[in-house]
Image 1: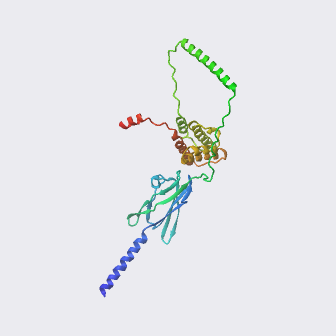
Image 2: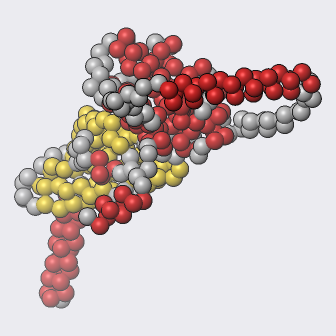
Image 3: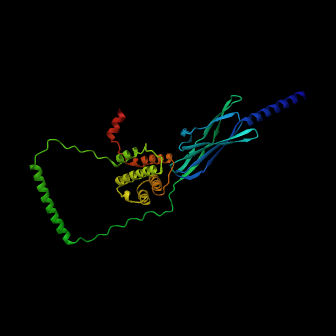
Length: 319
């Protein structure tokens, strides 16, 4: 009887110590809101930890973007702590965003903590969460109506005579020009012709000028977004060959949706719509948002970047 009593007493003490040790470990919960959003929206990632006051946790910092890839950290906020029966409820909130559509996953995060009383260190892991990012375009909108074929119109007879007369005059003009060029004295110094810049090179130089642009007042934001919008519109007009400078944002979006992949057209629409809000509705975004639009503009013109010749690529690879 004595041996049996000692056995049950030791078992009860061990069980009590195990429960006490488990109660001292921090308990973490995770909240991700919303789990479905549109491109560019804010996503709130909140970590709540119920712990002893002596426990200190190491959370991802504002510059630790790798912990939330492919999402970007916009803001980190420590919420007021709460006390619950000698325990502390600690909350950290991150504001995240993403500029790609589709299903994306927040990776699991490992939180290391240290008990200041026992100097023991351990860790806990937050589970992975999924967020679906959708486009802001109305999918119910009708497609662009097909262009009607051109009808042939009979050409009047006088047009042929006029064309023949112009050809005769053109031939005479060419003959006189060739004769003049042969008889005039040759120039000693050759004329140097400056190389023509591509639409990508022109737009890239203009966008680089905006990287250090000071954004302090409403007029600064308006001038910044005006330059940003005009640069992208000029690039679209020169690269794709349609009058983007004279068209509305909705008209440009219709053309790009018909010609280019959906994601590329979406970036152009987001940038031009925000520029319209700043220019005409006196909307003033945050500075980080304005810098993000500049980065988006660089992505838009990347399609026009001249490709390196295969011979040069092979030479660089051999080096």
